Amino acid sequence: MAITLGTFTKLDDNSFTGILKTLNITASLTIVPVQKLSENAPDHRVYGKRQRSHAFPGRY
Image (spheres, rainbow, N blue to C red):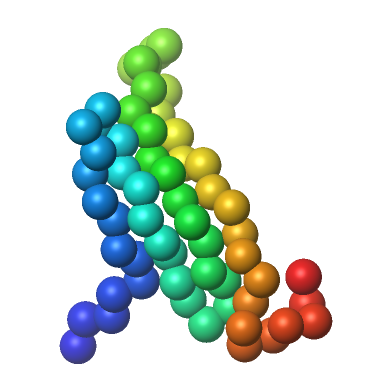
């Protein structure tokens, strides 16, 4: 059984935008490609805004 945790859309600039949703967290995310400064550097950066949890409204 597969569980979908997020839904993303690819934009024209090769970045992705979407929603990551779990029981505890709902977050709007943007995944942006970056230039690699070294061989071990990441290919993408993830930027997000965490929204208030509906399962545990008083925790954040």
